[in-house]
Image 1 (cartoon, protein in one colour):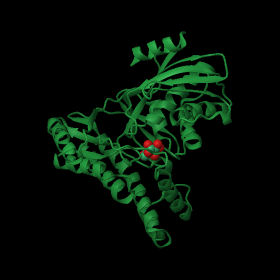
Image 2 (cartoon, rainbow, N blue to C red):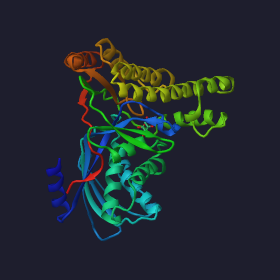
Image 3 (cartoon, rainbow, N blue to C red):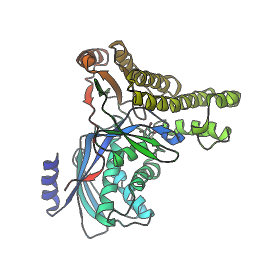
Image 4 (cartoon, rainbow, N blue to C red):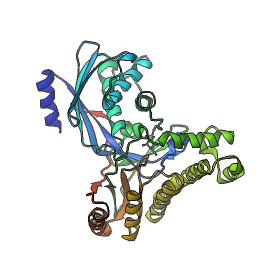
Length: 377
Ligand code: GLA
């Protein structure tokens, strides 16, 4: 990827450049908890977006996407917003940097990646993080705090892409560290690195290839349900709510809002259970909570789909320790915690049974926990 990028940059722009990368993410547990002020447990992975970038001395940005085979040129004022969705991520980052009083000049860029698109691995946050990191390095002497870079990506989603996402994806993509998951408290925004090397187990993703697209998806509606319940309870977020609080207002809310809040309150506890279990090396409990998250997301939060339910059931039948839909939902991957000795049989069953049922070859993605945003050259 690196060599293709360099030669494309050279032939298109013919000058010196800097090379940056940022990473996709996994999340062990804690789904749809970020915008509810709860905990998440993500890590960056070895799937990246890489960009060769050079300031061009003008006030225009010229970007080439290798994978989409598309080119876009835009100015840096609000009214210069580009048509292409992918370019809005880059444009939004530049605007959000400017809104915070930092500098952005024109630049030339070519980028490429191997984060599968729409698979729930946060390809959009990866793109935002890569450019936020680069703009900070190229135009601001790295004066913008790392956490603010994540917020810049999140605001880009809110203000230029129509997704009212939480902070998890951009946070993970920016802060990721090799071999470590991160436990982030999305209320205080404190986080800690958590070395993750479960002896005798492997983490593997199975991509159903059902396209996951949060833009225009019911993601924002889920968030609204949670906010309605929290405000009825007189709380800022559902972080502070217990099941008993929810039961107390059951008659005053819709069945749908009740189900959404029930999932979130349960998920908050599951993340804490998983952290405790990990400290004891108790992977059985970790796995059980993963299955519970899956069925909570499927039945109460209603963000799964038939294919992902099929994969979670198949995992359970193969004796996989834990399996669940990962990320926002509506398609994408399951994340699976599998004992070494069961790995081959599980993957074999997935490769045989999923295509037999849905006529689609699933993609198997072993998880390698890696560094987040960085300058490469
Ligand atoms: C998407 C959002 C995140 C988070 C997850 C669900 O990936 O971007 O902020 O809400 O969904 O956990």
